[in-house]
Amino acid sequence: MQTTSDRIAWLGGKPGACTSSGPGEGVARRLVLLGAPGVGKGTQAELLGERLGACHLSTGDIFRAAKTMPESERSPALAAALDFMRRGELVPDATVLQVVRERVHCLRCPGGFLMDGFPRTVAQAEAFDEWLASQRLRLDAVVNYELPLENVVARISGRRVCSRCKAVYHLQTRPPKKPGVCDQCGGELYQREDDRPESVRVRMAAYEKSTAPLAGYYGARGLLVPVSAEGTPEEVFGRTLSSLEARR
Ligand code: AP5
Image 1 (cartoon, rainbow, N blue to C red):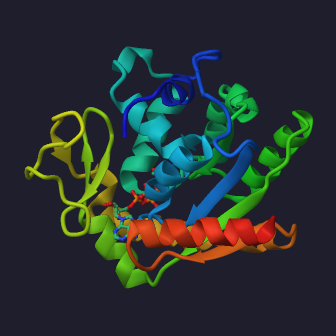
Image 2: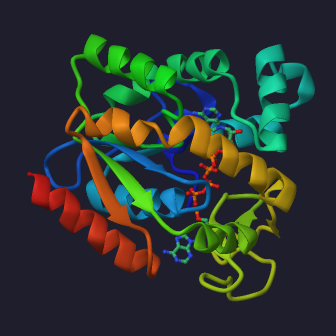
């Protein structure tokens, strides 16, 4: 995964920095990806982004990018957000909504978007609906990735991320060619702080309590597309495309 211009616009919150070439199949797709931590949303967002020409917009990536900012440049809300994240807790809604509000231009991207990690609570989903309506946009679908808990934990514990370009690997299922080194940019691979077992337990509990109810929220609006996340990334990708195609 390269740091493409759409990621710079989203991560840095700079309007006008996106040079998306527009929708890959002629129609802009606007999707939300739901599912437990580690289920594979980011992996699927990369594959879907390449196929659909839509921008991958991850709130977790914004917070991780903020970690590399000099401390003096972080707002108090952003500094507090990093503490919540480190512990595996959800960042408070007011902070998340502020961060997304600063990037609302990304919702208007002509290529569409793939929302990964947002919304994560019913309050965030309601605010998101209001913004979309104010921009005269609507969601095409909300893909809900489903996987048994033990598989999710195995995916999280084997994850390694490139410190430079943020490409995601897995020690068993997607290993780099050279251990500890990114295939794409040669950067050093590391384990995310919130992938340690004590934080993973907190993340799973937060997911069950606050995020899982979004399946009901979007189901009631006719937008929910359940997809099994079992199998290889390519199998899950194929399943996602056929489930989305079946809705059109
Ligand atoms: P965020 O970055 O959104 O993390 P998450 O939802 O916990 O999701 P992950 O990034 O852990 O996993 P993923 O589903 O993308 O899986 P991946 O593709 O990497 O959020 C982090 C934190 O930020 C939150 O805990 C919270 O504190 C804060 N935050 C962010 N947004 C927020 C919000 N809206 N409100 C409040 N707080 C917020 O895959 C995982 C691993 O599995 C990888 O190693 C991958 O290679 C491997 N893998 C993927 N697919 C497969 C497959 N099919 N088979 C085998 N291995 C696979």
